[in-house]
Length: 374
Image: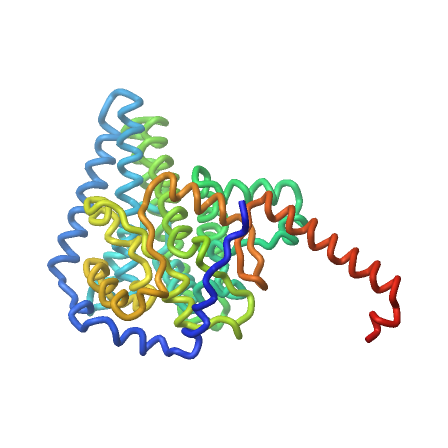
């Protein structure tokens, strides 16, 4: 398969201020509704608690696992709600957002303050600029070739539509929250500590409760399986948010800008109406990156506003297993200079061609030293 080249038309966005793009979004898209936010909070909580009750109380092991998968899905929906709260999109009160968001992140074992620190400042501040934002950063063919066998295996597993949960676990959750140590001068250092402590206490208590209620199978169905299912959801969603054969990544800040990163490098993936309701429109992602203050229930309208003026710079696709597999298959390795994606096979051919070109150039220089000098 030939390499995938993004449209270099994004360069015209470089001098455009992000605020200029935001002006295309109507004011009503920012209007918060406490009732709507709380209603969705109640729905997500009810779905999660019902699923956990099923995982603990039903007798058949396969039903326990079914409810465990349902609970993991509910954890993902709750996380999206907490994600919006952390952006200040749902409530005027930061305290209300933090308390409710913290509670909703506990089942995913994510730490609200730590997650918000990395996500809001780094990911949203430098989207697709890989020198800073490491989320789903693709390796070059040369990088891939230089890695150990184990590193290559992990990278391949991360970039598979079936095992991509490893990326969030290994690149975000573990280093960015569990093992993260803030600088001594960071004013949030104490809040980070308490966020970790609260999550640890929740895990210990919840683990003990599920074991007491339903033994080892209860722990598997109500704790471990929902955690793994959540990680799969979040890894897949974030991959689709910023990875597409036409979406570039940048290694040099001079090539990048906020407008390019937030508008051009964030995608729109449409699903069925019911799916978009459940996942709180999180795959309608470009307007969220243009301005994360937009509540999830206004993202569709904000997308229509942006498309009217900037549709040529937006990437929209329809969610399907075939489309997801296609994106994963084409987006394995990346050439940051030419801005094109490669599969593992085409990446190997690319390296071989580079080596042949260098050898031919060296041979020509040796044969015609005078001309080479000129």
